[in-house]
Image (tube, rainbow, N blue to C red):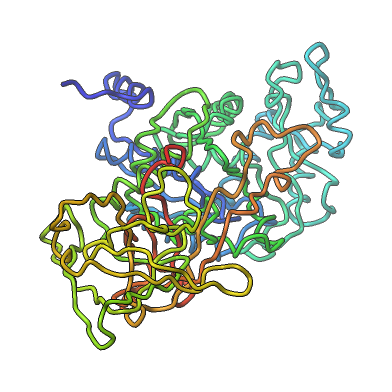
Length: 546
């Protein structure tokens, strides 16, 4: 069967066939002003994955041309996240600021060619002078003499002028229907220290000017980026064609990743962190890679998700349940089974001897006998989950109820006798009797027992906090934010609920990050920051299919 090629691979195949390139070379250029989120992961997987597929190279380059935003904390976090996903850049790690000297030289080259000029319009004036689809933009400084432009630009570099006094603009086409070509700013004055160069520079190149130069100097063959940069491509090409760079990279755009109930905006995510609505960038409800990792997602499951989404030319909205399905499929195969009682109620087996104890052998994974078994202790006092008992049961309730029997998973069938209540009307404890002939099978009289519930011996548990997570937002399509409303208006009040749980004692040896299936409940991960805490990863089945 012939392998299916996405449109990026078709472009690369054609470029290779025509001899335009010899070895594929891509780059991943994140801004070190925040933590990577799952939207970045799609771009990352395309950049690194495409290079790997063609036995090429992929550079990691920090886009640090804006000194107001960068922080080394984010640089380290980005590196950690990329390695966690299974990618590596070898010795090809760069900063956009590595090329500040060359950016300046190429700006001088444009001025000398009459293709750039120093402009005195303020930001507000530039907006006023930009024109519209029927009127071209204007600038009274467009015909400033080359020598004067050179002098002013060098004085800008030397720090003679305050922020906003001058900009350097590319001289392209003030009447272009593409407003990015209406003499865009390519340098601006910013008296801010840079995280790598301190106060060496007080002028900084814009992304649209610096990025094509960075690509060209690194020998990038295909500059793969998200669809919002499509309108920037003519400017990208203009820069490449008008400065004397050694290579001619090609920009190709793909659809960005949009997910239901998820906002992939650094500004929004940062506001959630700074307002204290979430527990930092790695809060398990956050779509950041560090948050997903703490939640219990694996790098392989996220790459699987990106693969299933595919590479497209048009933006679309992906259901978050596809991401959940990827980790569910992986953990269904790999995660050992354990027992957790999230809302424990005590059960007393009246006819079971006080001093007796026995052990039932249960599999660590029913489909993988090679994962061995473990022994679960059985005594007179047990815990079951409050959801598995009802004094007034709804129709078709096959768990523990008055006049009803239920199987304790892997152990005896028990029958309800009575319940002792607390003063507030809640159940304090339930008294049952056990059919002690059913430890290894069905009743000898042939009666049918439909329900099976999980349980733990009361003296064979550990106390733990279990965090149950839902989507952070109730708004399904974040692109359709109602007018006059903010994303914070759609925060899910049930996005995190903490249960005081009783867990199987074997879990006291679990390590941070270890993942398990809590039988009948879902998949859980031991938290990496808080002791005796587990985070819900995903349920046993699609939440809309329950």
